[in-house]
Length: 327
Image 1 (cartoon, rainbow, N blue to C red):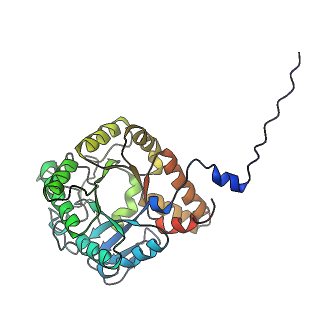
Image 2: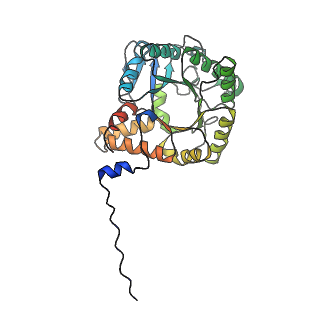
Image 3: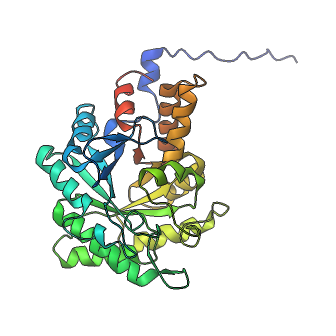
């Protein structure tokens, strides 16, 4: 008996229905815009390796915040560049630090802005590492955690809505949670850089934050990108210590890790569309090799599809505008 050849069924989906049935979307409320605030400048200065991104003086840090908020972005991640550095990063840990000044400036001008602060010592230490260094060049984990907790507390006292430790020291989540709770800030959330790989995609950021290590590298405390199982250990540790949001960094090269995190933890999951990803897209777009808008939106959807609830991206204001149009 001969059976009729079955023809492929035509899906009757027009553009309106296509928008209605999308499985994954991106909204401006899910984007976090990183900003660099410098203590040493009086006017905005473009970051050479990150076209369109600026170093902002404290007195003008509210300007990019206002602009992004008009486009629907409400959350911002602050990185500070101090005028002076020292071996222990003390300039980043007091109430007069560059980040604390920036928080107050933003809250004065844009009280509705949701301010997240980077908690790490690399921008403030003269050696460029994320923790204290002993005489043999090794990172001193426990004393570093105490300094990081002190920094987090100063940010929250200045008005930060969330702190984001990016250092990868063991035990720093519990140290920060304890000092915040002891000082009456039990409701301040912690977004932990839980899975942070020792990645070459951070190159432009190290220029932007003036945070490249003077000697050695960060492979001793950041993760080996050849491994995936270690990620579960780091995620579990930070979750148990009190992290409210877990992060995977970088973004696109680690979608498998992002997916694993989203499937195994009940808390929100964030990812960081990092500087190298941003700069590569910008460079190729400037050459006319790619469509910047389409590539950015496709990248954001890929991260959402892998499980990201929040995406930190330098494209946030641009993407918010593009998202007003249909994909």
